[in-house]
Length: 120
Length: 286
Image (tube, each protein chain N blue to C red):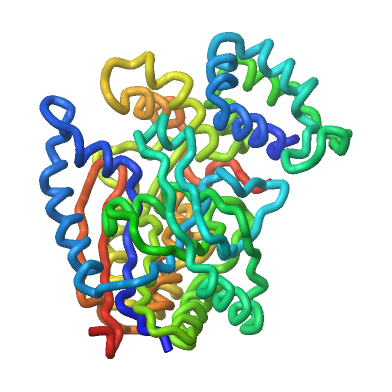
């Protein structure tokens, strides 16, 4: 399990307008590129000083590649990062204000407390 | 010594700017009532004639990240740029720029550390909507220097609720001991019950109206005994998965003082979350 890395993916995509569009248009390729090139970048360090050990599990990789926010919630992705990025990806496809946010809630309606642990 | 001109605790709602400036069909039905309540609340700060604002809020994974996450952090910089691309995208918030008061920052850091709070600091901090929302609602001129104080209400493991209260008490004592003739308002924003990225989000009311009713009563009377008896890091998941922001209200109750009744209290039941606004005027503030 690498919840931290899933959160790092959501965080680094969400803050970059080009990456938001790239992830929307081609999620599978974006996740593969990101895991190969970006996953081990330490965000506040020189490029040469990177980590060596970070990788997604198969379930995490598949959920990210499928834009499957229900699975990501169930894997313990941070709820704020998940909501913010997915609003950026899909709100535009809905005519009514907040319609995407309400659909997001409805698709999680089988969940009651406790929710999956978001601790990293 | 400095004077505490006002103590203000509020929710911060990133949709306020867009709702309050929308017109025609885009203007939500609740906008006029919301604007009226905000303008009345703003007057409670204006009449306190502050010179400096201590702003308690929380970074929403903007500059602070899980590879290096402080629990409590004080900004110490001459200038704070503000707001981020994803806040512009989602909420329509503008880029802003606020002056800092480095002397008060240094005083809070030195005194806070010496009082047992190992405060992190930042000499280059881009603040987010937890700071700019209350600027927009309470001081839209954005003309006063600030000292940002960030708390971790977002990424477990978080400090205990009692620690927020204790930090609030310490901030008050430190501002009161600041060798300055300035008038300082201490403003903190948090949340009542709130769900983000979960099944209870964006409903017709906040996810737990009963918690909200109790929380508003606790804050209005600064009833720290009742709040601390019911609130824990575990219990705060129950009203909504983003309700740990209530700990910033508890910090502000620590600033206001135990059982000190707010001089001004108001609330507004909106879709998704309840808004709540409180102001205290400490003795000698006028």
